[in-house]
Length: 87
Image 1: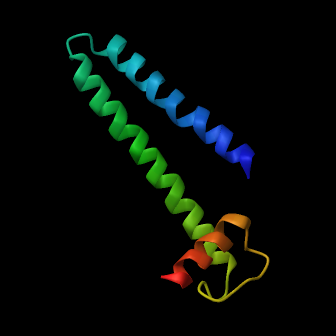
Image 2: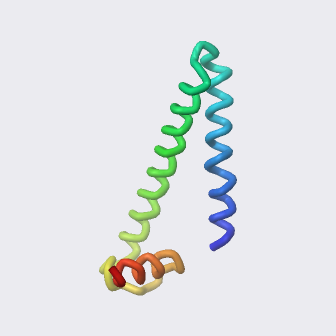
Image 3: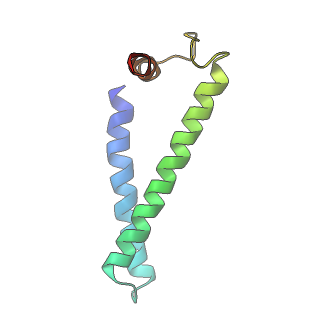
């Protein structure tokens, strides 16, 4: 579970830095704030697509998303289910 966290901690800031750098070089007329704003939105969009994809994978691997504790369950999904049951 720590390996995906480590990769995410490197991937998303790296993507942000790469986008900011690329926009500064591709569009020199844009201000730094414009480049940062576009980079932030791009990284947020990538994160949203990846989160949606993982949610679809979890939903498709369970016959009953709320109560199924089958092979599609991982440590993160069991914690999420446990915290939602407490509320």
